[in-house]
Length: 110
Image 1: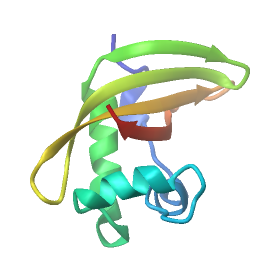
Image 2: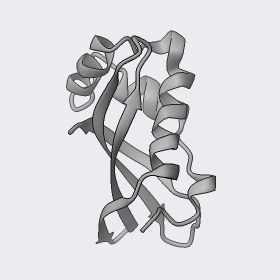
Image 3: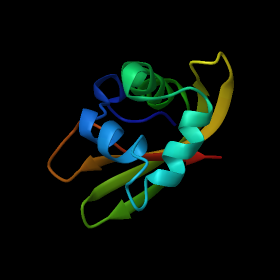
């Protein structure tokens, strides 16, 4: 099964800059360390955004989790990196209640 409305999946810039690539964020810094090993940084943030969206749009859903905020979708995929390597990541997306566009929540090594 594919992500519903996957063509409208989006990632907020602040989620990338202040969380996923932040070396000082309590939860995000371990993810930032991983992503920076493969060449991701603030200067190529668009590449990371496009790669995450590509996973949402092209890979199958692994799991659906019902939450008080909406439905979360777990999607595993390969992320192309600035150093021309593919890394396996697990991504989490949510379609918030009363919304229809999948919003990026997090990603981590898989």
